[in-house]
Image (cartoon, rainbow, N blue to C red):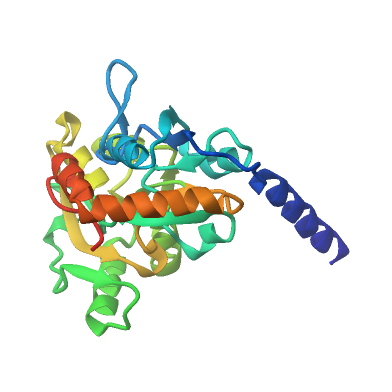
Length: 280
């Protein structure tokens, strides 16, 4: 027990040091994104970070009168690198969850969409009929429970690919613990394994799974099952920040509110997703 208490105390000290920030005027802000989760964020052939979040970041920075730099960061190290001061904010399709809010804080949310499954068109999974098209996990809904139970039966003996340390991985652990899960550094790599027959389905944000399905390698893939929202899947996507940077959070919240009111988020999300992911 003493070792556990000591370890927790050390962790708190490390988190505190990592979260400390000197007073800044925030005229220059470094924002991290993954660059591998289209259409939220991606990397073009020239190496430039592109997508909804890089565009929205620039729009928010303009509203904050700040000069911003967008940098790439692998998903696994996203929060630790923020705590270490390598950048000031995260805009990487990161959902606001209770677990993450224990470590960092969030501005926003600035967007939300359901999580969905993808599989091969030839898979028997596509033959399973679901009564519900959307399941809100925050509600005690009999139809939602029935959909999850049917999904569990359909996936029995199969393997689902998810990106590691994501809300979708948390969903699988909580609601479908008996289903085999294979984790990947990037959802694109799960899509490659789906096409190769190494997994039976993939699970991620609707737009990210749709991007794989619409790609050249995904021509034989399709979406299936209901879309899932809220609960363990979070409260929407927000800007990840160190808890010490309350002034920066205030700036981002004000800019996000303005971007919602003037239609910036609607315009950019429609451009990149084909539909509006803004939260009114």
